[in-house]
Image 1 (tube, rainbow, N blue to C red):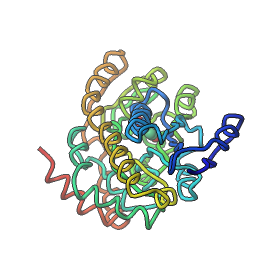
Image 2: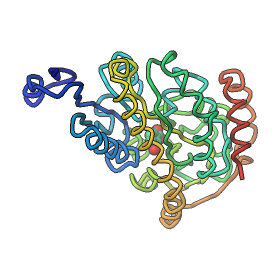
Image 3: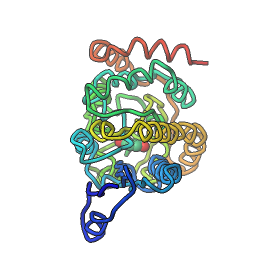
Image 4: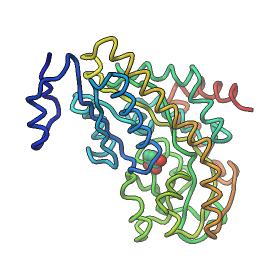
Length: 327
Ligand code: 3HB
């Protein structure tokens, strides 16, 4: 028997702190930045429910969505100290600490959303997770993903020249920053929860975003043009604090590792199923809708490749895996 005393606050916390729990029982905390209706948040909740069930009620999981525990950089720090148990996190944030992961963001690495899913399920992708305990202090249980990246803009966008000097909201991470800099735009790093207002009040001219959020959070409302570029994939990773992992029994590691991997992987199927329906809904809003290919970005793609060939040694093996999984 043990006393559960971790990560507690408030009256409920005090009550729980003194409740006797079964051996090894834990109330884990999982943080993520996505809002409640987002597929990642729903997957986190489903993971928690299955963890409680499979552990016979010994373990439970509280999900903190919408950046309640801080932004991703802060959550990653909390995972490192063991203050946070788990997170579903953008690979973007992880790439800020482990640049090899920047290889996933090679512009046009994949042809479409199905291809993104296949690439994430290759051994080459999975092998990258092995470096996380040593380099970042976290255990990566598996990949999920969000939709491909698109551009939503105020005003008209006839060519990439129209984006020159424009403030474009980006997720805060280096590969996307380098891409828009190469394009001559003014990339503006901004965490997800701030995006709607920034576009609505004109703080930014455009946003780099995926179909789910453009549609579900109605980002199209304050824009005139949607450019379907599909320029980058957007992987997610299920993480467990290395410190917390070290304190788990072999049995719990196997159960948590397997279940978390299953639920993050399930998001891949959700995006494959929903990407086109969301894009169709966006198209039907009546906003100007353009479909472009890599040519739209001129030499920005080659410039990006030159920068990241040096920064991310994994680029070569991921490109080979992308080629092998193309159809
Ligand atoms: C983002 O645009 O920063 C973002 C999008 C997602 C999930 C997480 C972050 O769908």
